[in-house]
Image 1 (cartoon, rainbow, N blue to C red):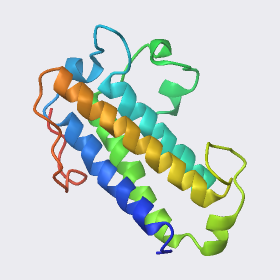
Image 2: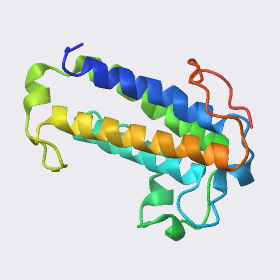
Image 3: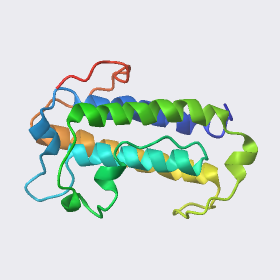
Image 4: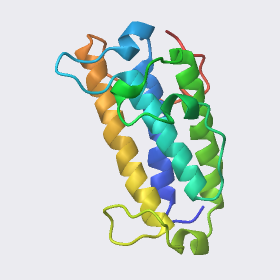
Length: 171
């Protein structure tokens, strides 16, 4: 793996497990619960992050079909989403794109990482490496939100255990 992308790939790999850990033991209602003041639900966060990772894979020229596209296609916010798939489907989509990126990132060459990216994010340059860096930070930000929401609905804190990716989804 290119040394420039290795720490970012490690963070994305960790986040794959951490977001799954946030869903551990949640019911469908808990996953869709929004705090009294508004904001995101855990179901929305996993759908949004899954979609963002699919965007990354596409920008890296290694797309994977996104099963959540019909759900998110016309949504500008959480309020535009009328129906949610079961948590197990969200888990499955998250695991799939996490596994896909885990195989894609080690294959990226220095030349590919240096190529300009058409999407500009608030980074020093517009290379694919900067795209990966920004979306890794974005991923981590929302995993933190998910951990916070988990505690706010009365569940134990998110665990930093690894290996959730291959485990069966417990509700």
